[in-house]
Image 1 (tube, rainbow, N blue to C red):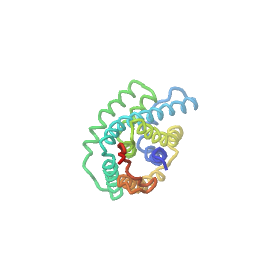
Image 2 (cartoon, rainbow, N blue to C red; image 1 turned 60 degrees about the horizontal axis):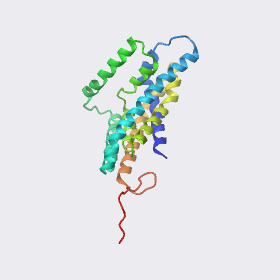
Image 3 (tube, rainbow, N blue to C red; image 1 turned 180 degrees about the vertical axis):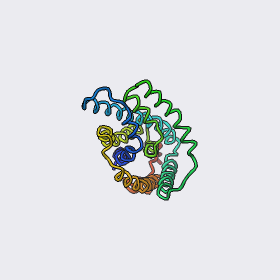
Length: 229
């Protein structure tokens, strides 16, 4: 399974969680005219804005990741990101409270101000969607952890694009139909999310260990010039 396929499925499964978290924001955006095709078009613009933001974040994280690859630190990054994802999954699974709420509030404050400004000035679905992509989200962080393990900024951006593409189908259906996924289904999915996070975390750890297992834990790539004796 390729990295982009994994990114797509992270987005697809994560979008059910996103409907409950970001859906109300999408529903609150006023629609100019009461025509179904304009509604669909507006929601496509909204979700397209999110995907563009995710792609841009992937490009930024890819620039950092490229430097890590240059200095040969990619193995440690994969191990660290995997361990952090496992810890995050276990804290959700066992409902462990961790410090950091003030930090999250600090990050959300400027984004919330941007959203408030956009709503007050009727900035439209696309602009609000791009800002929405900046909101703190566990699944976005999960995808970024995967993106930083890619080799170039372009591949990281593509990785995040496919993550965004995975969130697109259900988010579009939900925003057009005002939330077709009921709370019972969302609760069941949310219960499964920590297990998915732990499995992905173990996969990142295995990748970092370079056990020479095809697809699961490939051998460490070596660079350099061969020397003839």
